[in-house]
Amino acid sequence: MTAIAASTARAPLLGEGTRVGLLVVPAVLFLAVAFVHPVATLIGISVHDKGGWTIEHYVRLWEVPAYLKVLQRTLLMGAGTALICLVLGYPLAYRLAHAGPRARALILAGILIPFWTNLLVRAYGWLVLLNPKGMLNGALVGAGLVEDPLPLVQNTLGVFIGMTQIMLPYMVLPIAAVMTRIDPALMRAAYGLGAGPVTAFRRVYLPMTLPGVMAGTLLVFTISLGFFVIPALLGGTRDIMLAQLVELNINQTLNWGFAAALATLLLATTLTLYAAAQRWFRVGALWGDLA
Image 1 (cartoon, rainbow, N blue to C red):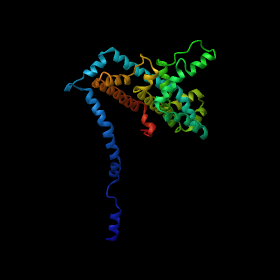
Image 2: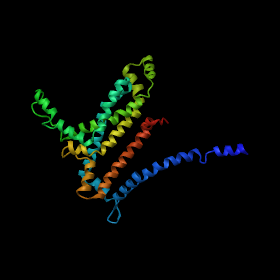
Image 3: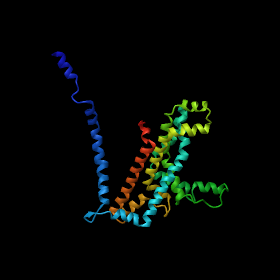
């Protein structure tokens, strides 16, 4: 009887699955209150107007050419920023993944330190550097390389410069995380089988880094779709993006239903892109899901 009682006392009151589920409950409740409920309310506002259900705001979005141009510009700016970050970030990620401890610490510091600076401060910093009377144009004119200051700000180029500088870490870190998991012996094996550096990179190394590439591209593209500060400060009147259009309808025209429809469109685009990337490019492999 004593042994049975001791065994019963040591047995857990709840199963392992139940204990894990209870640990997840606070996070689920927090997400439900802080994310799911606001998003559901947002979607509801976009399809409910004047006391009834309607799709008027979505029809207006597709029927007015100006709104379609803003949507097209937003997608192109996001895709362009992702492409530039990929071209600049892939070599940097390779260097980060294969550097020694001291060099890796220095590269990481250079990548992460900008995160400690407010986005608005960085945007105004680019204004100081890029405006016609700024430091960069002053140096170029002073050195005799150009006669007149270059138009580097208040245009699309200024938006690309600012967005690329801010979004580059989001491209570098996922790619570097995948690169550090690649066994160096695989490349040596490719060389031993007669493959040259270009062939080994194209046939062996690059395919293995695709999950990181797609994860970084997805992050940069989707976050770029919602940019507001950089286009507002560094862009011109022709560089209005979707987030600025949302702000315009909320604060100036007070058309909350149309603003909610625009925000819902951004959300749907983000979810669709993530689902496609997970389906065809195994983005989940970045977090260890290799199935």
